[in-house]
Image 1: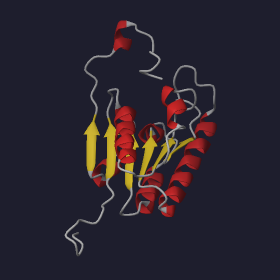
Image 2: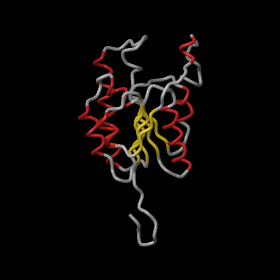
Image 3: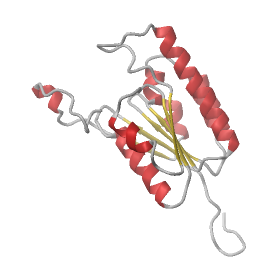
Length: 182
């Protein structure tokens, strides 16, 4: 809505990156970097990932960017050494933390990395997603990533991008590459 000087008031968007292809977190991080370049304050909350990921070392050094890692690693995949209850507790703590952070209005953008996967793995519920959406102030950008985005989130979002896998080196037997997958 235009102000007295003809400028529009800031409108915080809800953005969702989903799909089976690679690049959802990368897109969200790029958006975060763009916001930082514009003088904004960014919070990244990681719902599934834990250290060490390539982005962690550099993100911790960037001014006006806060990284909070709640994940215990990807749930229900090879190498998962935690019971489901541990993953659920971490995801619920991430939801509660993010809702509190939204209410403080300390951040201009909050990225909920792999929140969709947390929903897909039944670590959080639709009620948790609703709670998050209700806590979002109108001036804060909320970015949600991960495959399996719930319809509720996609319906509510201002922008939804689906990343589709066409070809992947894993299918040819390539191992995960440092700097690409982690």
